Every structure is written in C-alpha cells, then in structure tokens.
Length: 76
Image (cartoon, rainbow, N blue to C red; front, side):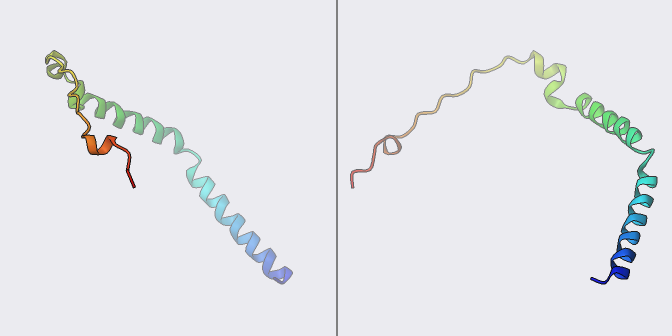
C-alpha cells in the first residue's frame, strides 16, 4: 500500500473513532441506570416470585424410571 494511501486511511479511521468516542462519552452511566430499571421491573413482574406461588405447597420432583433397554449394554 502506498504511503499516501496508508496515511489517508489511518487518518480517516482515527477521525471516525474520535467522533464515535465523543458521541458515546456521556451515555454509559445513563444506559446502566436504564438497564437496572428494566431489570427491577422484570423482577417485580416475575410470576415465579409472586406471593401466590410462595403459598402453594411444593410437590417433590417426580422420579422417572429408566427402561431396561437403555441400561443394558449391547451384546454384539
């Protein structure tokens, strides 16, 4: 790549990233607080955390039996 083209490309890339950094400089804290608000609302609206689901009696997990043809080794 010729030097003039290399310098031009580098300067264009550098200008692009400087512009992008200046746009994004102040938004990171705003985004974090907005995301925290969204997650808090999701926790409040979560049906598994509601009081009615806490009052229900919990059933023990159902035990499944594995069929014999799965347990046996192949006799080839």
